[in-house]
Amino acid sequence: MNKIVMALTCLILSSNVLATPQQVSSLNEVPKLIKNKEGSTKYLEQINGDEKPDGFGTTLPSGLSAKAIVSLLAPKEDLGLATLVGAKAWPYRPDTFVVIACFSGNKERYDNQKMLNQQPTCNKDYDADHKRYIDQAVYLGILEFKENIIKPTLVASYGRPLDIKTVWNANKLVPSSYYEPFYFNISRDKNNTMPEEYERFDLAPFKINEKETAFGLRLGWNEGYFSGFGYFEALALFKIDGDRLINILSAEPIYFFQDHAEKWHKDGTRDHVLYQGDYVLSMLTDKTEGYYNLQIKTHDSHWKRLFKWDSKLAKYMPVKVKKQRKA
Image (cartoon, rainbow, N blue to C red; front, top):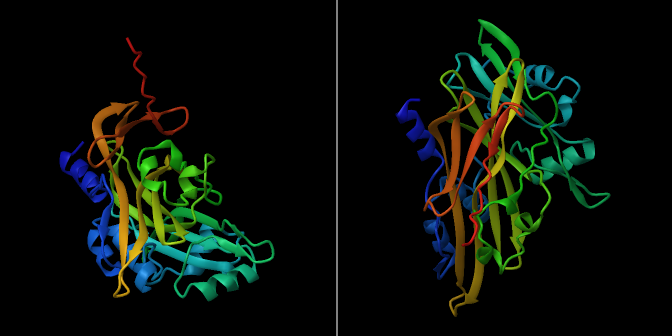
């Protein structure tokens, strides 16, 4: 594999893991501590109400309509309930777009989404009658399209609403000592969890062998605390298999931050403690069954996990670490 491409993949997904929490004396100073681009963007959305970046390409290419995407990707869904339809050019295949379409379950939930979100969004629905959040139907696919030359055609799709879950307590991204002061429900939930929101496509060069390149999907969760908030993000990878999109890397935790407000000052400002951490994802030179091995590790290399291709499951699976027996 091209070593430059490998390095690129590694750099795009990495920044800094802070081994210890950092403290500042006011809320305005917190953004300076966030070195991760995703985290910085999300923090400013929450604090300042900044507009969310268009991570899914909701401003569609000329000649490609939301109606055309939905008719190919999710023909049984109601276009009138679509909260987000997006398309982004895939750099690794000519005239090809990664597309997504998200749908509320009914008109009442759709209207509630529109009231809460001025921009297109792919979040959970809120069921006011039962006071609970419900997963939207989210469809993912690949289209071929070129204005005035190639009309939209479906290359591959996931074939059903996304059902990819994340297990937060099976990794070392968030050490237990980090979240003791907080209501860290994501990590403490031993069950798999669906995302709260779909954030963006990740079109880094995930070259899984000499001929195939995968693409990523970023998933997010938000948590509010009595004195702060947190954001958590995972990454899933997909590849084309005939006319299907298959999930080749389950949604793995990739980044988090938590902002915890503490002691008040006489001038009305308040101490803030920031906890954050992220992983580096890289494709290795070694292969298993024709696919490059994949590694996820903390930036400081204190923890890492190796993933190898499993042909029976058609996906990357973590390699179990053998425990050494004590002498």
